[in-house]
Every structure is written in structure tokens, then in C-alpha cells.
Image 1 (cartoon, helix red, strand yellow):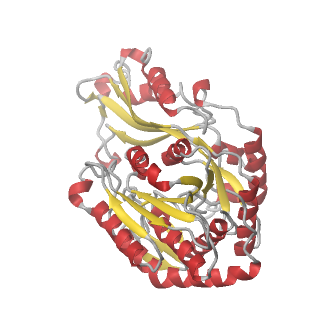
Image 2 (cartoon, helix red, strand yellow):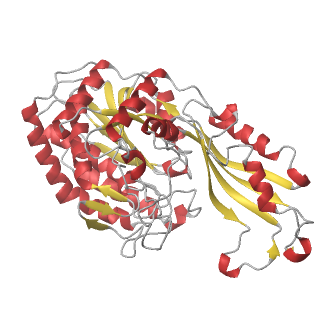
Image 3 (cartoon, helix red, strand yellow):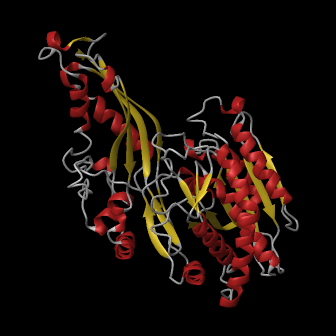
Length: 489
């Protein structure tokens, strides 16, 4: 795919005006209704098919897509057996451009679970529009994507700007690792033509002041570490000092993975060399973001005495370059859940029989996920302390993604779009999260360029409480997407 001349600066204003109206009049009402749906991904709702929330979300999106005035648009929900459904749309090229080469839009409509800690007047399924932010689960991750993609296409067509053929694949299994996606890619790839550009609107942003392009994603191993030493709980006064404590054994096992003082993951199998170009991009991102890299998190104050409340928990380091690299190209271990630990209010003087910890090990983009999963299991289970019964079962092991080099035509289009929409050039940075579909799309379309971007900027808190969609930023991302699509053929 080669570059067309960049859209003249004067064309930006009418595109932006059309997209603004589309968002206010049509997209926001749809997203408000979408947020109300507890369309949790299959990993969090085993009865998703019976509950029907995912079906409702994708049917609402299909209805909206088909209602838009786009010449030649075809859309359908596709199902393979009992798999989660996908929405596929196909829009012919305009301006005399051929239909063989295509732009592929990707998004998803399944959601993460509720999570605790929401502000009293907010909630995961309660849409609230406040100060330009639409609160609620899924609006930013990633319910807006299908609507933004169509809005970008429609604005170009209304302004008579030629564009390539555009196809869309909207899945409903992404938050569970996209385990249903390969089957749909195999079935639909022949219908997509020669995909030259993939636009995935499911990533983050370092700030809300420019277009951010994701260059890499970390891999992930999720699993549960179980340590059992007794068949039932016993009085701690009787067993203390005789029976080894299960949590202490679990803690010793975790010391095999990371340094409890620094958080550095130790085994070589979970680490990788950082490429030179990613180091350069990390330095550039750090120069842009500075201390905001760590200040954007909701740090707890260290005291409640009203005097030292300005003192907060400390980040791992305050060096912005190291922080960017830590969250994008280095492994990190987190304990995200536990079983066997009663609430403090009901905990007696009993030595518990077992402890189970849910582990989340983020991996550098180039480390193979399944191999890392096997190594993690071996490392945790071998030579158990005190001959305790130790098991590690990993539910998923996903490999990360390192983007191909950005072609000159795409780099120019990204800078032009970001400058028109924000007054600043595009910025590049890896993301610390895991999006398995990018590796799948990269394998299926090895010659395609990748535009991975999104609206998950500071404090948007995807997957957590008080998640929000920054509406003004989403509108600009939609305009920038339209300009990049129109700058290619």
C-alpha cells in the first residue's frame, strides 16, 4: 500500500465537525446502552450464552451498523458452533480505488467483570456522563471501536475523500484471550482480500494530547499456585512452630520468581533483550510524559493523621525511562487473588490448611507464552519446601507482540493526522497489557502495517473501578483514524 498525498489541513475541519455530530447524536446513546449490558467475557461468565448479554451487545452493534448510510455496506453476525459470535462488515472502496487491497478494523464487545471500589454514584453497568467522561465498564475497552470505525468511514464518504475498501471484525472473546478468534480468522481471511493496514482501536495513550501508537504488547501467564500442608485447620497455639505455615511456603516459592525487595523477575526464561529501537522510543516517551508516568496512578497516602497526608506510597523508581521499560519490556509478577484466607473480621487463631494465590506474570513481548507457562510451573512445583503439596495450574499463556517497522508512508500519515487533530506529532510507546489478537492478526497478515491505538489514557482505569471513556479524545482519535485511512491506497 502506498501513500496518497496527505489530506489538506483545510479538510480536517469538516471531517472533525461531521465526526463530532456523529458522536453526540448517535454514538454516545449507543454506548450508554452498551454500558448497561453486563456482557462479561466467557472467562468471567461461563453461562454467557444462556444469559444473552453478549448476544444483545453484538446484535445492537449490528443493528446500528446496518442503519448507517454507507453505500455498498454489508454486515452480518457470524457464528461457528458454540463459539462466541463475531460481527463482520465489508464496505467497498471509493474514488476509483480497487477492492483487492483492504483496511481491516478490529474491535471487541465483551467485557471484564465488575471489580470492587467504584465511586458511590458510579458502577460497572451504570453509564454516567460527567465532565466529558463516560463512566462504566466497556465503553473505552472496547465498545466504542465499531462505532468509531464506521464514523471515520462515513465522514470520509460524506466529504468525498477517496478511501480503500474497509472491512471490520468485531469479536466477543478478547477479554478471555481471544481463544475463539483463530477459527473466525481462518474462515473470514479469504473474504478480506489483501489486508495492507490493520487498525486496532483497543490500546492505550500516554496522555490525551496527541495520537499514541502502540509498538509492542507484553505476554501473560495466568494461573493459580496452591500450597497444602494439612487436611483441616488446627489451633495455631497447638501447631505453631510445629506445622509449617502454608502462606510462608507460598511466599518462599514466589521468591523463586521475583525479588520481594525490588520486584525484579529473576529467571532468564522470563526476560528478553530490549531492541535498540524500542529503547529509543522509551526515551522519547519518557521525555514527553515525565513524572506523569507514575503520578497518574491513585496512590494511597502513607498516613491518616492529616499532617503527612501529602506523603504517598513510592513507585519502584522515579526514572521515567526505567518506568516505561518496566511496564512494556520487562517481566512483572502480581498476586491478583487468594483462596484460603478468611476475612480479617472472621479470622480466628487457626493455622489454615492451605493457601491458593492467583498469579499474573507479565512477559516481555518476545518471550514465548506457552514456554514461559511450562517453566513457571516447573519452577514453582520442584522441590517443595517442607514437602508440602504444591501445584501450579496455568489457565492461559499468551505470547506478546512486537510491531513490524513502521513504513514511511504510515509514519508520515500518523504525524499528519496527529498534527491536524492535536497540534503535535504522533508518539510511540509499548503497552504493558496483553492483547493476544495482535499476534494472531500478525501471523494471518504478515505483510500488513499495524495501527494499534486507543483511548485508554491516564486514570481511565480499564478493567478496574471508575473506568471511563474520554469522549473528546475519542472523537479526535476517530478523526485521526479517518485521516490515516484516507492517506493510503
